Structures are given as structure tokens and as C-alpha cells.
Image 1 (cartoon, rainbow, N blue to C red):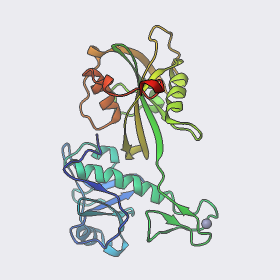
Image 2 (image 1 turned 180 degrees about the vertical axis):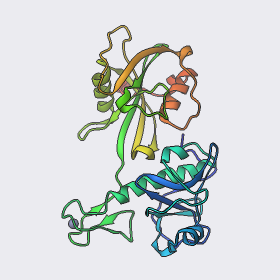
Image 3 (image 1 turned 45 degrees about the vertical axis):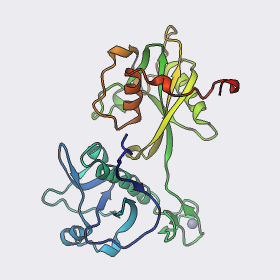
Length: 294
Ligand SMILES: [Zn+2]
């Protein structure tokens, strides 16, 4: 998945330092990243290049996080394109080489989005300032602290024996970068457990009741400012489907051998489909099993 960047390690301790000349800078404005990006690779400017090309001083950059010993910094300004440096959507860098740098760019873009939308206090409306002791924004007027916002989502692969329920989004929700089958997904609402969300989303989108829920893992998905929990669940494929037409244009049961292979394994959806294609779904434990069986 995108967070699997071994042998490198993502380190999000908030331990700010000043940028060095060679420190990578994520220039991000309105969910676009100023980078060099082609079919295979992505590169980011250094702090020295950011100063030389665009005149942004090192002291105006914000510390973000580290990967191993390399500290990354944010520049949140709308700067002109130059030579091979172009504005790209964060999804354009997904899966590019080196994988640790494309992951850093995506996480930086998520943080940039949060800083950009947290400039004012939600309680009193005063302008926030960057906290010096935590990854947070602080209101100097009323003391309100705003921490980074991450929205939880569940993604569910509904199974019945050797068949998996897959979908396509309708035009309104269609992402032209993703024409493949999708799995059913939804935001966790306030007051719900993740498993409640699994049951509710599948009921709302398909009309089916699920059982035998299995948790498979989680991943950051900075492109939509979310964190994703992946599940398998079972339902009766003989029952009629009541597709939610607001979001979906197609909903169908596909047999294991007819599922198209995924091109890469960066997302939870890719992995849920590939594990099932290879018969590995039984490796995950039921979370709603009777206590005596645990
Ligand atoms: Zn305030």
C-alpha cells in the first residue's frame, strides 16, 4: 500500500528544525503540488532551489515530518510554474518513483489542505497561528487548538462464496483516473463503530444485510484527507440488489476468476480484490464471531 515505503520509515514526530539547503520542499496551494512529474518519476524542489527560483526564504517554510533523517518542509504559496516545475494534482504523483517521495508529497498535500482550511479559529473567528510545540493551529485570542483533521472511511468487499460484489460510480461521482471496479465505501458517522458503518453503508447502497465481518487493516489515504479501514463481509447473493443510484451506476456479483487483476497495490481496494483473487480472504479473523471462538 502507499504507506509501505520500506526500507524507509515515515516519522511524524513534531520536532521542528530549520531547513538545510538540500531539504525537500512540498510547494502546495489549493490541492496542487509544484513538482517535476512524468510517467514514472516525481521530484520535489530543495529549500535552496525554492529560494533561488521563487525567492521564498527558508525561514518562511513550515516543518512537516521526516522520512528517516530527511526533514520535509511546506511552502503554502501560489508560485509561478518554471522550466519543468508544474502544478499537479496529488493523485498524479501516486505510485511514482521513488515511492517514499510520492508518499511524502501526498501526505504533505493532506497537511497543506488542513493548514489552508484552518487559518481561522472555528470558535471565535480570529486568525490562527502555527503552534510551536505540536502539529496544531492555535487561536491567540481564545486559546482554541485545532489539530489535523482526518476523516475515517470504511471500504467493504462483500463476498458470497467465490463471488465478490463490485460497483462503478455514476457520472456525478466518476473519477476519470479510476475506470476500474470499485468496492463499496462510506464515511464513519459520529456515534458509530466502524462495524456499524459497514452494516449501514452496505444496507444503504445495496439493500443487503451483511454478516461475518472481517477487519483486514488500515491505511492513510491523503488524497481525500481520509484514513481507510478495510473489511470483508458476507451477504446472500441470491437476494435482489437495491442499488443506490445517487452514487452508483452499476452493482454486480463477479466470480473470483473473472475479477480483473489490479494494476498496482497502492490502495486498500487493490489489496482487498487481490487477496480475494488469490484465495487469501480467510487469513483475516471474523470480528463478530462468538466470544467462545476467539
Ligand atoms: Zn478563537
